[in-house]
Length: 154
Image (cartoon, rainbow, N blue to C red):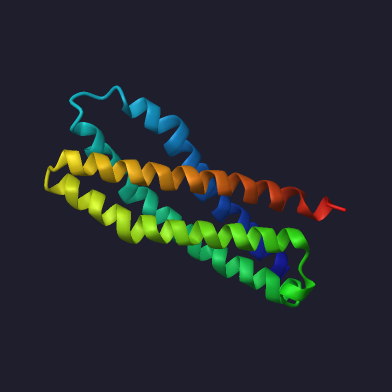
């Protein structure tokens, strides 16, 4: 029962994080391009990120807790976990570090630039945020695929 609850929490948290990045990068980003005047785009992104970071921060914490819970309660530690678990752990750690940089370094600088109406600086900061999200989205897809198929590997 414990593993079922941990796995369900892990899946929901991963869906929120990876799905949120997919929506932001593939759907919202192109749609925002047509908003005029251009100063409204960073303002909209600021409002989007404010909400996005709340849910993703909770999801990241849930992923870490549920992931390590499953490793130690279900597999008896890393020695009992399959190779796909180690791959998910590695990609998850990289994603966590990239998210930490995004949340605690890039985002505050972007937010401050928007709040002070320095839209040139905000645009540069948004470019960095886009790159981090693109990398994390790619890693997220790899992690989801590995997690969904790994138990069936030879």
